[in-house]
Image (cartoon, rainbow, N blue to C red; front, side):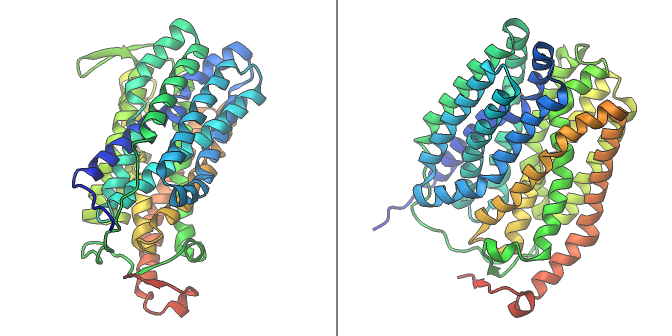
Length: 428
C-alpha cells in the first residue's frame, strides 16, 4: 500500500526546489559581471565572449526534455545531484579558461548542469501542486529569477578584490555543493492527485495531448514564436547590462535608494533579480484572475515602455537603475505564463513534457545575444533597444489578436479531434 504524503511535504519539496534554483541563477544572471573582466584580460571581444552565454542558454534549454525523461524514470535525486556536480565543474573550468574553446566548454557543461536542475525542479513542483501549477511554476522560477540577488554584491566584490577567476572558482564550488546536498532531499509525490476539473475563470482543455500532438498544432508554434521574441530581449539585457552601464558611464556612479547606497550597476543587478523573482509568481497569480493573454499584453507592453525610458534617459544613474528593474519585473513572467498557458491548452497529463518543449524557445532566443553585441558595435545601443521594443510590442499584439482567438478556436474544436488532426487522451 502506498504511503500518503504529509500536508507539509509538498511545501518542503517546493522550498528545496526554490533553493536549488537560486543556486544556479548566477550561471545566467551573474554572467554579465564577468564579461568585461574576461575581455580586459584576454581581449577576445565582447561578441566572442558572449557566445559562451549563448551556448550555456542553448544547452540549458534544449536538453530539458531529455532531462525530464530521466526524472520521470529515475526520480529527481540523481538528476539534480548530477546537475550540482556539473555546475561546480563548469565554473571551475571557467576559472582556468585561457582560450575561447575552454570558455565555451565551461558554458556547455554549465548548461547541462543548470538544465538538469531547472527542468527537474519545475517538473517536480508541477507534480506536487497539480491544482496550483501556476503558483508552483512561478515560485520555483522565482528562485532562478531572484536567486542571484543575494550573491551579486559578493561576486562583484570578489571580482574587484581577487579577480574574476577566484569568483568563478569559489562560487562555483559553493553553489554546486549546496545543490548536491539538497538533491538527496528531493523526491516525487508517492501518490497521484486526481485531475483538476476545468477552471471556470480560464479557458482550459478537457483533454490531454502528448508532446507529439502538441507540436503538430499551430497554437504551439505561435506560443513558441512569442516566447522567442520576449525571451531574446530579456537575455540580451541580462547578458549586456554591465557593458551597457559602462558605455552609459553610470556603472560606478553611487546611487542611494531605499536607504542603500552602492554603485549603479551593482544596485541595478540586485534590484533586477528581486523584481524578476517577484514578477514570476505575481503575474502568474494575475493571469489566474484576468486571463493569460491579457496579462501577457500588459507585461510585454510595460517592458517596451521601460526600454523606451532606458533608451531616452538611461544616462541618468537613478533612471538606469529603476528602468532596468521595471523591465526585468515584467520580463520574468514568461517563465510562469507560458507553462501555465501550455497546460491550459494541452492538458495536465503531459504538462511537464510540453512545457519543457516550449521552454526550448529560450535556447533559440539565446542566439540573438551575440547579435546584440555586433549590433551595438555597429550602430550603438539605441539599435539594440529599438529591436527589444519592437519584439515586445509585436508579442503583446500577438497575445491579444493572434494567440487569444486561436486558442479559443482550438479549445472550442476539441470535441472534434479529427478536425484537429490529433487523437487526444480523455482526462480521467
